[in-house]
Amino acid sequence: MSTTEASPSVELHNPAGMGPVVLLCEHASHHIPSSYHELGLDPRHRYSHAAWDPGARELALRLSQALDAPLVASRVSRLVYDCNRPPEAASAMPERSEIIEVPGNHQLTPDQRQARIESVYRPFCRSVTQVIEARTERQHPTALVTVHSFTPDYHGRPRAVEIGVLHDADSRLADAMLTQASHLAHRKIERNAPYGPEDGVTHSLKLHGIGHGLPNVMLEIRNDLLSTPDAIQIMAGELLQLIEPALAELGLTRPGPKGSHHA
Image (cartoon, rainbow, N blue to C red; front, side, top):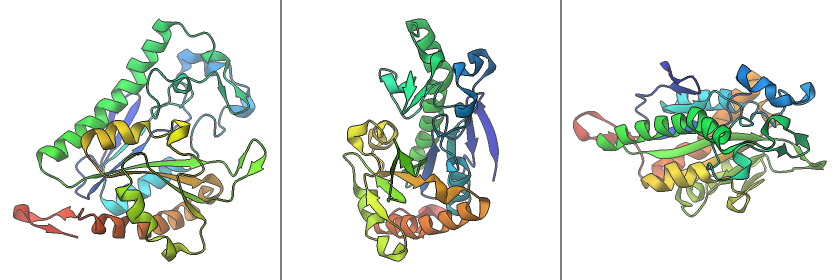
């Protein structure tokens, strides 16, 4: 599986993948470029879930390999810029993440905000658009799947949900996946949980999925289920039991030779 550096802030895996999915991982990295002086974060929080989605990148890589799917992932912490938020959103460069203060994001000037938009968000969006447009030109069937993780506790309250299947106005892929949930009877799977559109988390789905007319879904996995390579491999296998039948139900199959298609 090939890997390229689309830009210093974006990594692109398997760009020529022939499967019917494009994967995104907006919160793949906790890297904070040195020019931001670690955003003044308390060292205890430097590698916490506030800075990234633990396990999400590794899970997305496993799915990319299994599905022969291109993967676009951010190389920069979401505290510098959250690529799943539009530039006008306060949460794109949050001053506070849950209970964690981010001093380096306080009182940013318009020029400082624009510099982050241009160095992190725009390159990510360009990479996604280039991958999708290349597939569109080839009339390559495509669904968009974004990969995230979430904490087992939120403000001290435990979360029972283990796998969240999130959607915005287009629920086609989410609906098709949820009809397969009985195959994972041991898992707590919920629609639009632990977050939903009302929480402002579906920006990528709207911009890159709905905006290009693609079926789309956001996957949220509780991060205690992604704590080891073996656990990540197990979760990837379980998710494929939801994803692959859903793709088939929507008629999204891998292109074959001379314009034919096969599953």
